[in-house]
Image (cartoon, rainbow over all chains, first blue to last red; front, side):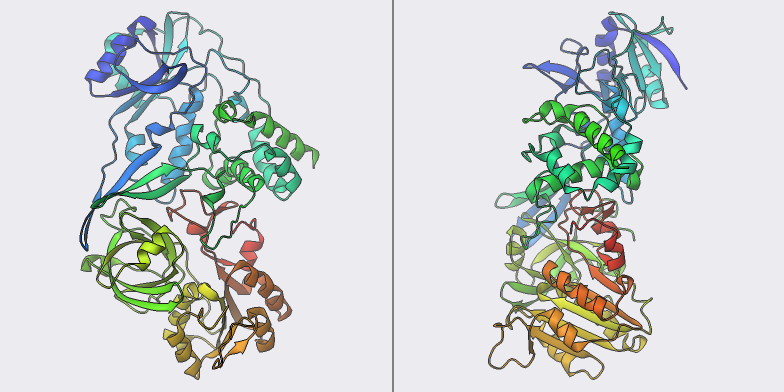
Amino acid sequence: MSETRILNRAALGELIAALTAAGQRVLAPVEDDGRVEFREVTDADRLALDYVQTVTSAKAVVFPRFERMLRFAMRGKDVTVEEVPPASPPTVLLGAHPCDAASFATLRAVFTWDSGDAYCEPKLAALTVVGLSCARGDDFCFCTSVGGGPADARGCDILLSALDEKTYRAEILTERGRALVDLAPGAFQPGAGAKPRPVAAILPRFAAAELTEKLPELFGDASVWRQQSLRCLGCGSCAYVCPTCTCFDIQDERSRYDAMRVRTWDACGFGHFTLHASGHNPRGKQSERWRQRVMHKFAYQPARLQVLGCVGCGRCSRSCPVDMNLGEHLERLAATAAGSE
Amino acid sequence: MSHECGNGHNLYVPYRMRVAKVTAEAPSVVTFRLEFVDPADAERFDFRAGQFGEYSVYGEGESTFCIASPPTRKGYIECTFRQVGRVTTALADRDEGDIIGFRGPYGNVFPIEQWRGKKLLFIAGGIALPPMRCVIWNCLDLRDQYDDITIIYGARTVADLVYKHELAEWGARPDVTLYTTVDPGGQTADWQGRVGFVPTVLEQAAPAAANTIAIVCGPPIMIKLTMPVLARLGFEPDQIFTTLENRMKCGVGKCGRCNVGPVYVCKDGPVFTMAQLAGLPAEY
C-alpha cells in the first residue's frame, strides 16, 4: 500500500502536537548532554533528526531495561500476588533509523515463539514506527551486510526520506502508518516530491547468509574464538546497547512487607550468566561467551526463529571500551570460514 | 503443552502452593511436598515425568528444579533441592503451611510409553537422583509394563544419599535390583551397600544392553566416566537418556541462559538422548 506524502520539517511540531493530543506517546531522538537518545517529546524543539546513531537502541520501548512483573504483599504467612499491568501506552517511535525499525522483527520473534509474553506483546501491538532513512553513517555501521540498508523500509509503518534540508518524503507502508497520518492530516501534504537525496553509502562487508551457513563449522576452532575475544572484558556493554539482545534476568526485590518480581536486561557475556549452583559453568571462558554471542545472533537464531540477531547498527562497537568492532570481527570470521573450505 | 499458571495468559504468575510436608534428606538437602492452594489449579494441573518448574519464595526469587514426584501420585508435587544460594536458602527456611510459588510444568518428558516391554537401568549420582525419582516411581507404579528394573545410585558419603527410606523400599522389592554405593572413605561402620564410584559399580553389575534403556543423571564427572562403561557394555547413544540442568530463569525459551547450540534446554530438553547430545556443543 505504498502511498506518499510530503512532510515539512516545519510541520514536525504540528505532527507531534497532533499525535500527543490524540493520546500517543511520541519518542524521538533528542540530544541530551552530548548524547542522542530516544526520549519522549511533546514538541519539535529538541529533535535531533540529523543524528547518526543513538547510544542505546529503541528496544527499551517494547523491552524495558527494568520492568516490574509481579507485586507481592506479605502479611505473616499470607501472601497475595498481584500482576503489575504492563505499561503499554499507544506509542509512536519517530525518526528511528531502519536498523532500529528492523530490530522489532527479532524482538517479536523471541518474545512470541512457542509461548507469548504478557509484557512485551502489548507494547509491540501499541507501537507505530516512523522510520527515517540515514543521510549519514559511520565506520561502525554495517546494515547492508545483514540484510538491511540506510533506506530499508522493513519494520517501518511510515518511512521518511529527506528530499532537501526542509522536506521529507513520507512513504506510508502499513495500515498503522495510514492511521497515524489520519491523526495529523494537516502535517502531511499531498505529493511525492522529487527524487530523495542520496542516503548514506554503507558498503557490504560480508554476506550474513554465508556466515550463518559456515559458523557451525568454526564452532570447534578454539583458536578462532580466543583470538576474537582476547580483548573482551565481559562488561556486557554490547548487549545493553544492542537493539536485538533479549537475554534477561528475573529477580525479586523486597522490603519488609512488600516485594516485586522484576525483569531486567542481562548479557551472555557475563560469567555468572550460565553459572550453575554447583560451581560448574558451561561457558566458563570469555572466548566461549563471545562465541555464544556470535553464534546465537548469526547461527542459532536464524536456524531456530528465522531471524538474524543483528541489524548492523554498530552500537556494540561504538560502546565497546576496548574497541572491539563487531563488523570487523564478522568480516574476519567470514574470511576464515571461506578460507577453511 | 500449554502453560496455565495463574490467570492463564501471563505465564510468569506462579501457582500458589502450600508446603504440605518437609523432609530432611541429607545435609542441606530437603524435599518439599507442595499442594495447590486453589483447588481449581490442582484440577487443571498436569505434568509428565521429566518436566521441571520454577519454584519461588516471594521476595527472594525463583529457582529451577525438576518435579521429583511422579504424575501417578495425584494432588501434590514434590521437589528436592540443596540449599546453596539466596532462593534455596529462603526456600529451606519455609515451614509446613507456608505458601510458595510454582510455575510449570516446563520442558519435554521421558518417553516412557516407548520404553514399554524394555529393561530399565537407572544410574544416578548425588543430588541427581531427584530428577530420576519421578520417572523411577512412574515406572514402578506401572511396574507390569516394564521388564527388569535396575537402579545404581551413588553419593559421596552415606549421609549424602537422598531418599534413604525409598532406597530401603526399592532394595526390599523383589522386582527391583538396587545397587547403592558411596565414594571410598564415605562409608560408615554399618554401611551395607558398596564402596566405590558409580562407573566402577556399573562395570561390576554389568547389565546387558540388549532391549535396555539406560537413564543416567549425575555430576559432569560421573557422566563423563560412566559413558565409556556403557559403551563397553554395548549401549548405543540412542539407548541412553539423561536430563540436563542448565541454569534457567524463564523456563520458556526466551531468557537465553540454557541455550546450547540451536536448542533451548528448557524447551527441547531437559531430557535428551546421548545421541542428541552428541550433535550439540558440550555447553551444559
